[in-house]
Length: 98
Image: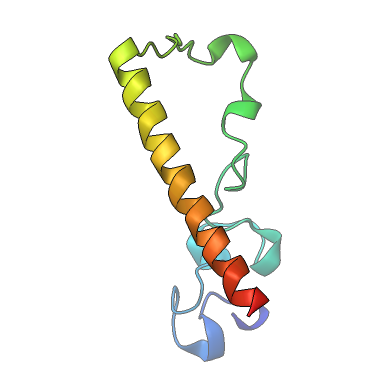
């Protein structure tokens, strides 16, 4: 907007640029205005930090409880996995020795 005459960039008419000048209703042109912006946190993940701790939701945490059957199944799977890993390591060691 040349000299603040509300004609837009290069005299092409109002609101043909970024909409940051007098024609957009701002009191000052250009970089003096914040534009659309993203609010207090500026989009950096400070959403809850701008509020008092009392307003944060309380979430109940229940400990995971597994049955004996589930624990046995898990331990068997873990044992099989470790046996397979041990076999792979032994095979790799044999290859490196030859």
